[in-house]
Length: 198
Image (cartoon, rainbow, N blue to C red; front, side, top):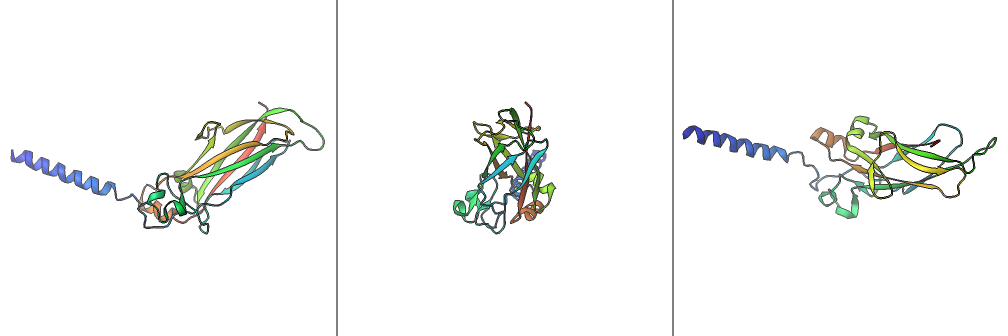
């Protein structure tokens, strides 16, 4: 009986210790500042007729910006609440495929491919890959970008641009070291577009 009590006491102490340490890395408690979100809303891009791709660097967070990007679901636990913080940033790209002198692809149908790479937090790709998430709108909702990139139908010289929407979110840091490394830092992402025959 005494042995059983000792085992129960040890198990109870282990449970209390685990519960206490389990919450030790819940950082979004409303007492610190967080990465800021850029105010850019849309970017227009024209993809040329030749092979290759067009790339742009999207700066999602800027420490001097008024809005701040916080992990999903943590707006209420952040300084300033929903007045100063967002847990997602949406961006629109309007993409046209234009032919150039020396040839014409007018009316040709192809596939536009969009990829998002080089996620960085303060120029650190390890942190960016671990804590930055980018999704695209597939016509129904935001979903993960496939490994080969998101594909869209595009027509050469069409006056209507293909609208590509992406959403950027921040994942809560896993430990104190990473948390200290990401707060109030800039986030950047490389977004690339290419056109190829379907």
